[in-house]
Structures are given as C-alpha cells and as structure tokens.
Image (cartoon, helix red, strand yellow):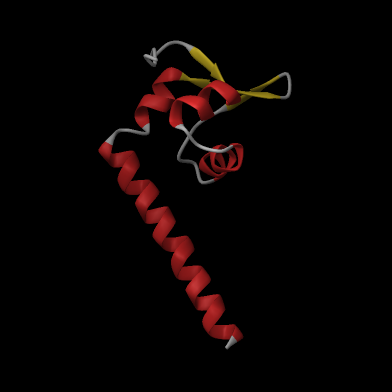
Length: 81
C-alpha cells in the first residue's frame, strides 16, 4: 500500500501500515515521534507524518528517546539491587 502525503489515516490504518501494535502507536505519540490528532475521540494521522518516520532525523530522535528509556530502566534496576 502506498502512503499518500495528504491522506488522513486512522489508528488502525497507521498501525497496519507500520506493522506496530496499538500500544506502540500510542507510545510514539507520547514521545513526540509521531504527530497525531484526535477527531471525535479517534486518532487521525496525516500521511506526511507517517512518511516523516522514515526521515533519518526522526529515526535518530527515536533512537535517542529509546536509549534514554533504557538508561532510566537500568538506573532503577541498580537502585533496587
């Protein structure tokens, strides 16, 4: 399926296109990696936002956010020991 820049996609369509779970979709929004809008209580994503995920700058930002989370988890595990 081709992602069209000006098309509007639902949560289900977006998760299907990206082959991710609903929880991953919501995590991407929370981290600011994916911009989505709520319309009538349902998420909508512009095609250009999905395409931006494949931009190297966005990918680097996602890596950075992932490593920050991993580092925090490691720190907490160390505190528990």
